Every structure is written in C-alpha cells, then in structure tokens.
Length: 483
Image 1 (cartoon, rainbow, N blue to C red):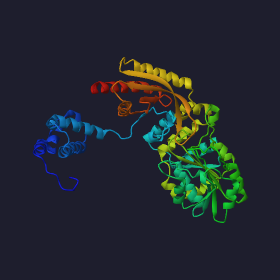
Image 2: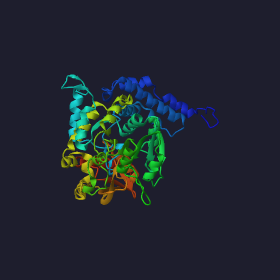
Image 3: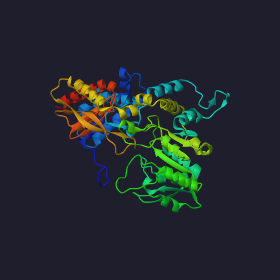
Image 4: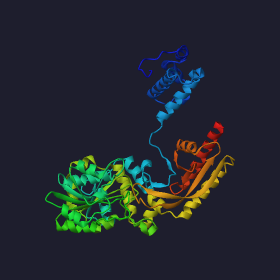
C-alpha cells in the first residue's frame, strides 16, 4: 500500500519473482524426503513452510533487494529447516550470567542449591504427601510442609507460604485490614518491580491507604495523629530496593510495635528481600534479618523466598498464630497458593539455614555474594588464559577491576568488588560481540563499557568457563566471515 492508502501496482519484475516463488505444497513435498525434518511434527513443518513463503512474498512485494537465486528449492528448504528447528527449541533456557548482578530478576533471580534441585526431581518423579498427613492417614495442609522449619530458624510463632511476596502482602492486607485504613510512611510507598506499587497492591486488597510524613522524613507523631476509629493496621515497608540519604528520618519497627500495642492495633512489616544472615559479618551492607523483625514483636512479617534467601519464588508470611490462621481461611489463599515443586525447593533451601556456614557454601546466592575477591581474580585469570589459547591476533583480553551488585531489589547502595574479563576483537564492535555471545547456546549475558565486552566473574561458575571459550570461537569465526 502507498501512503495514500491505494494499492501500488506490481511491476513486471515483481510478477516474475512471484511466479518463480514455489508454492507451499511443493515445498512440503520436498520436505518429506529431508532427513533433518524426519522427527519434527508435520504441523510444525507446515507452519514453517508457510512462514518462509509468506516472508519471501512480502519481501518481493515490498520492493526489497532480492535475488532470484533465493527462490530455489534448496535455499527455501534451508530456511524452512532453520525456522522449524527454532520452533522446536524450548523458549525457557539456561543462560550464563556474566553481568555481575547476583540476583538478576531478568535471568530468573536466585540459582538453587543442589539439594533443592535434587528434592524437586524426587518429588516430581512420583506422587507426594503434598496434602496428605502421613501420621493420621487423613487430608493435610500443604502449608505445614515448611511451617516447622520456618518457625525453627526464625523463631516465629506460625508461618505459611504463597507464590510470591506481592501475593503475601495482598493476602495479609485483605485479611487484616480489608475496608479499613492502613497507615504507612509516604517514604515507604515503593514500586516493587514491573510497575507494581505498594499503593496499587493495597487498593486491590480493599484496604484504604493513609499516608503519613514526607518522602524523606516521618516521625512517630505522624502515625499517632493519623490513628482513628477506621485504622486497621500499621504498616512498615522496608525499602530494600532503594535508599534515601541526607536529611532523613523514619520510625523503627520496634517503635511502631509499641504504638500498636498502645492502641490495640496490629503491626505488619513487608521486609521485601528477607534474609536469615547478617551480611555485615561478611563485609556487606547491614540488612535487617527476619529474626530481628520477629523479635520486635511485630504481628506479621512478609518477605521473598527468591532474593537474598536464595530459594525459589515464594512469599513467606510469619507472625502471630491467630492472624496466620485467619489468613489461611481467606478465599484468596487458594488462588495464591504455592505448588509442590516450589515447596520442595523451598523446604530444602530453608533446611540449609540450620547451619550458617553450610548455608553460605551450599546456597549459590550466598556463596556468590560472600565470595572473596582473590577467588574471583583467580577465576578471571583462568578464563583470560583459556581465551588467549585461541592464539588469534585479532583478540585482546583484559582482566580489570569492576563492581558487582546484589540485585533483586537488595542492598541498593552496596557494590561488591569484582573482576571482569574484557574482550575486544579487531573488526568487530562490542555490540556485535555482545549479540553473538547472547545468541550462543547457552546464551552468555554480559555488558558493554567503553566499547569493550565485559564478563563479570562473580556470577560466572567455574564449570561455565569452557562454554564461554567455545562461544568466543564462534565470535572469531563471525569476525572472519565479515572481514
């Protein structure tokens, strides 16, 4: 179509090319004899043929540069095989995280411990006692599978788990303060990712938001003045994904609990990225632990299972038994419930926390965050040496100082000292190197700085080094083909 909306005339050259373009049935007949397509379902082959033929027809009609040689059976069949194989490839695939962001939301957040992966396999291979009480021989609750271990390592009176922390917050607000006011500091009305915001979650729960204080300063008297007959809950949101510095003031959870007791109001804290480990012992930023929050006497605390905890995606709720029981009875609980595979991974992860030293070494997130710089440098040197074995004069490698991030909305101001391996290939831009590595199998996700492709060694595993070396060979071949 032209800009005026009228159908443009097909030129004689285009008509000739369209006549030469094989039909779908003809290509399908040829595909039957091709051994590479033997094990691919016919529906996929048919869809692939139509896609390729339609694409070629569109190119001809759009006056794109086109050679008649591209319309031979051999060339078209090659394209069909490429499309068909791509359609048969799983969309969700393992990647190599070379970004230096430990809890990378876009890359699936936390890597699971081996014991968690093994437990998932065991549970998924057969039936399980998901909702069956083996002691009584009667129906049980899936929430009890992890309740005991959560209470043991946290000191909580009761616990339950749903599918993520946003769901946990929604469920708690709906149960405790539906149609009533929830008082929260204006400086704690965070956006939790994907454009989901605490005020939006609160509105969906039926609770009524009542902001107090200012963005940078909130005082105890702000909460006191806001309390009235419609108040249902005092809420504190830990700002784990950002920090306000300078002229600031906020009210601690312990103070809020005292105020709640004075007015017979429940107090809830959304920890966001909860942890059972005091990271300051390992040279990292101080984050409030779940145990510390529970010890303040807060009625309900929620936090994620897949951030600093290092487990699967889950929303963990701990606190007063009487409130947890009400939450379990909420009809929303079924809609937000956790599945058996997540429960298997979460239980195995939580059990590791019985021994902090074991948790640090066995849970990948904790291991990567606390890994000393000398070990990271050793890995970087090993990768650089491996890459230099290609003995290609176009390639230059550099081991440089860098900084990693915790990620996942955790420790926003803290940078973890790290080492990167930087690549430059003569005749290939950093952007092309990045794209080639990203298109590799498995994809390698790095970053670009100063026109250099960088791979942060904090988030790269030792057994991934050979795969990176093989991907580099693909880059060098691509550079040679373009030169």
